[in-house]
Image (tube, rainbow, N blue to C red):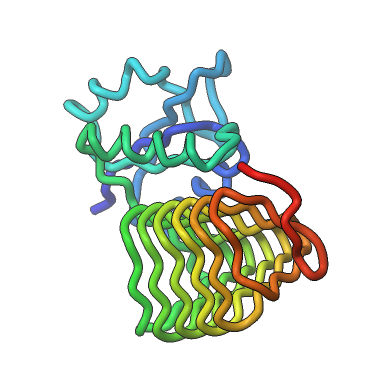
Length: 212
């Protein structure tokens, strides 16, 4: 028997999540919550905005997923997660069947792991972490709550990514580097030194270019 699930958001990432959930056949998606004026997206009906959440929690489904499109900062992403969690929703894991995840990995609640991701042994992944397409997380890494790893990024062994940090597309992070909380690492950067929190880095090697 399939479990019902409600989607929050109708952007690009929501479409990818819909594909993943339809492929693994565990959930039946009953519709999308979105403020858009469109009637449908990704082959699903848009059933209303935030004002409909309580009705669907009470009557239809306590399971929910949300995409990232349109959420311009990780801070907004965290606030949305906390809002849905506080309301009592079960924020489901979304894990693509082509991802390769060691049995010795600890995974928090509400993660999103897209196609082609590889996670090796003794990795710890916090809640609401997003691992985008084809990124590689080597052994003994730690990715704290609400962080996002971009497509094709490589984290060498023993890397730690702090809470709410964003690792851009194609980034390379050397072994045992510590990325502090609330950092942004620009696309294509190579990180060779530990970072400071609330800071933006970019380049090869990555250097501080601003504050968040």
